[in-house]
Length: 319
Image 1 (spheres, rainbow, N blue to C red):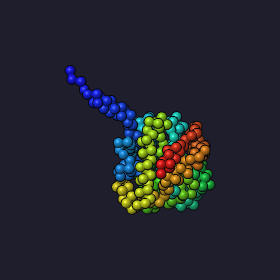
Image 2: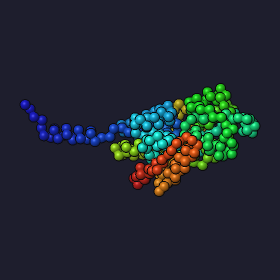
Image 3: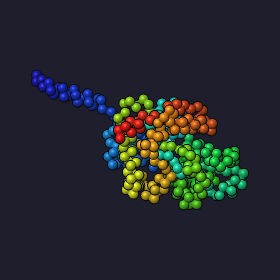
């Protein structure tokens, strides 16, 4: 019987130990919102390795949330209110990154001037029946000072907004870019948007707490890649918009219109918003949870420790 040399056996053991210690890819759910496209852009440019991060594309945030709740994915790109909703459903999750802040990209549209609508006995409004739709309607009522009992809400999912509007399904609609601009070109009137709502809508990266330790380096790698893509968007807008248009099937004009209504926080601004005891985003998440409960969307909420700034501050120290 021929024995393998000692060095060969040692090498085999080392290989097996290395293979076992390697992380599986981090799985991240994301739906087709342009604010999240920094991740596919970073993968395309090689700033996020496909071996370390797998992007799971879903049809809507509802499907991304379902995958988080079931444990099918490690993380998901969602709005802050959706992160609070996940917490209320028992998911042990945290927010570790702010992708963008809506500053005009989420819009309230009307078919006629408000003076004409107010004269009606009832105003119908199309809203997606989720946390974001609830938040936007509550903010609109707060800003307008109108009586909410005057409104009849019709549930309409985001993928139905265009057909719903074309079929004259309601007097008003809460939607977002680029759909808002497309409908305005067809005659819809912009009543208000998130420019007048003081940092109401944040898009964030939500991570399951039970995978943070095992996925630590992959999460840092993902955040580094996101900020590299962000630097490209800020520093070489024409090229970035061309690449983003190709990724999404949108036109460069649509991409430009979208980003005109968004704030894209760099690393410094992310740290400014997330760090502290409590930080600004944590403080806002507590008030947002109270609003969603008051509006009847949540029975209860727990936002304690929702925002974790550790990954952002670690990246800051590396620079």
